[in-house]
Image: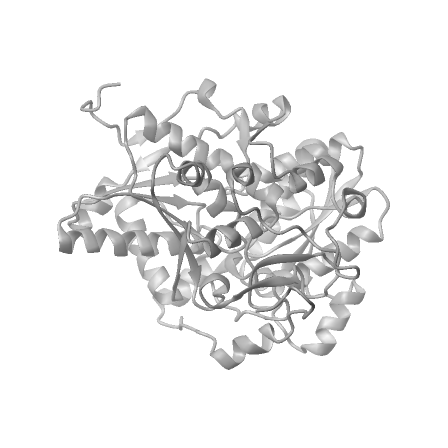
Length: 462
């Protein structure tokens, strides 16, 4: 490939260039992420213990710290071909608007029926549930992208799908809810009165708008009371991050096709799966000493698990029924403000990304919601895509970095993840346009309340 040849506006990979393997970063990590712990015995969770909650093959992926590349089943590859490989787009119009010498690229994951990257893992988890002979699955969803993706995947494989949707999103995004129902899913606002944990949370926090931690607790309880069901998760767990590595592998392949070497890769961060998926092959090169990149996680200032949380073992859910994970966390009892950060309202961060952040392999920044929506509208007006609020966190930092290049004259190459579209987020856009949106940054005292609930035991000092 001639390095001087013209680079197209959109870089498409051919169908035969679709990744055939998922990449497992853990295999290249010197400091492996800490194992999940049984909250009662404080010993590492075994496959047998996890089998009551998760699908067998997904458990094997969750616990695998050594296999570098895991084959993608042919049935999943065939499904991926409906919308993958997804394009890597040069943001020429944004560059011109900013007057920056930087080159900006974005990996667009919104070109499927779920409108986001979530379908990459949803179809994999539904496939393994079907292969195991299950009747259905339960799950949680924040902004609704994961619930939408899973409902479609379950419809494809003929599985029942029960979704617990964070209450503030359930109320703010009725159209997203209806898409899930169109695909046959049952959608319940969380916390609800349909589970013991939901009723307990409502009693302890009257009028709460919910959180992903609440919804996870309800979904796990619902799964445990129905024979032939398992719980599946849209982020946080290592298995989900693994499936999302198709994003980064495609991005790397597209860049390599035109001899483009990025200086920085930027992704929004909630539970961590899309960020981890995007940066995975670049992390691998960095860990192996092959190349250095600036890898930036962007989270909402209202739920700053990396930038203001603690690195410790904590419950993955508010109801404390899930295992303990070592991660950057604000405490499982932390209830984020009902702002429009969408699916980025989880109290913790994936254990792989937490370890990488702790080791200085990646960095993190937090941004405020009005700045995020300002960046979203600036992007939409010149690039023609209305971005999801989650994705717009990455857009904010990409614009900021491009403007720094304008000041210094540096010609950096910036890549960010455009994880999905925002066409179901018009309530949020309306509030921003009407001047009714405000920023919320929790105080140290407010964060300490959640951190105080993190379990204390020998070896879990923070």
